[in-house]
Length: 296
Ligand SMILES: [Zn+2]
Image (cartoon, rainbow, N blue to C red; front, side):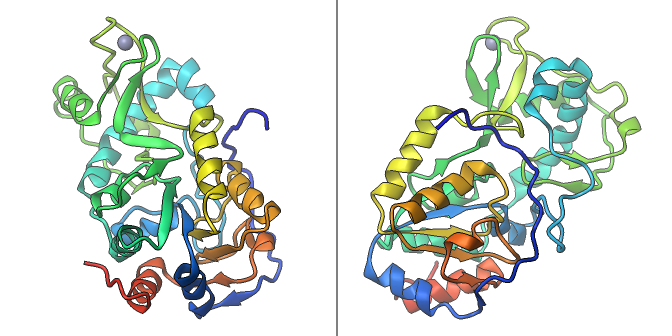
């Protein structure tokens, strides 16, 4: 199976896909059995967190932080934490939307056997979905690369505020990983803080950056959840990175239906019979209502 590294390389091919706006097929599969769900940034855009790709499917101007840059470059970390310090305000303030609420309703009524998310924003949990598997980690936690201790982001946020009173650059736009675009000059003399527990260890958000690896145990757990389900439903992901696409391929290979609801082409289109091309919030609300479990 090999090491799983996130790479942001895929661009849409423009190949025609079996697109529909009708939810009949998805509703039927949900009615008939237990379905595992894999969600991506597209389900959080209605909460004010833009995804990595614009309307044309192309990656936005500034590439996401890479794992290698973060662990090897002091300046890179300083730029990242300055940006992330601003982005955290948006992430911490974001509230679940209709899509998250519908997923919670479907999960709590037993239509979904598992919810796996590529998102690090915690909004599925905030909507009341239990046992969410966070494939790429969580922005709520910070990990020390020295001693391995995990601490709350809120605590780091407090320390960063103390160390950087008066720092207030204008964020151009926030990204799903809590990073933001700002002018490089705006980073100024932003002060990074280190681990308290081991006196000086490098702190990293407990998320998988591009070029980083998803923990083996998490990958295995997700394969198990897909194996235990009758079908796989992808919500709001272009499946550009292999970490999510591999579960789609696995489901297809083992003869399970793959269903996709997403605005725009996805890398998983060849594995699905139909992709529903609709905004997630309204589509999932309709779906939950049709299954007799309207979202709160
Ligand atoms: Zn430490």
